[in-house]
Length: 133
Image 1 (cartoon, helix red, strand yellow):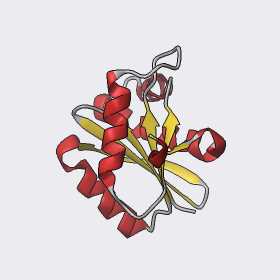
Image 2 (cartoon, one colour):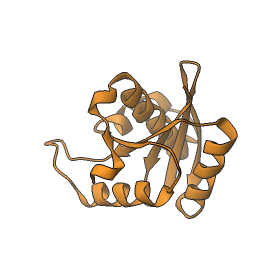
Image 3 (cartoon, rainbow, N blue to C red):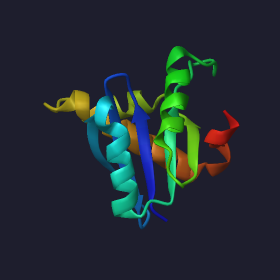
Image 4 (tube, one colour):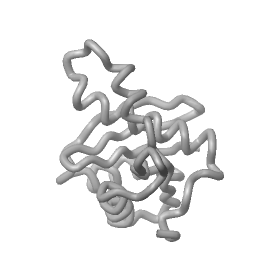
């Protein structure tokens, strides 16, 4: 199965892909071109499912970013399952992986997307269908 992971931010969107069991960060794109880039990736890579990070606070409650991420996921509008997955702590993990690297800020977004994708693939029962929001 080929899957796409997405970390939605206000200015940038991180993308990651899974194919043949390997999860790799792809790149970080500007929010203004992200949906078009996602659609192209889905078509070019024959993506079968998309996992979008669902930002919750440490108590598990919604935040303003939660609503933004849900809205973004609904705007993707592809004929694929779009699943939301709790992304708590993925940015911290990604920041730890990119410490000391020059391009760290943009790299963190795609690394976060990879962590989101790993979570969704390893715990599919925790992911919620976008239609449930």
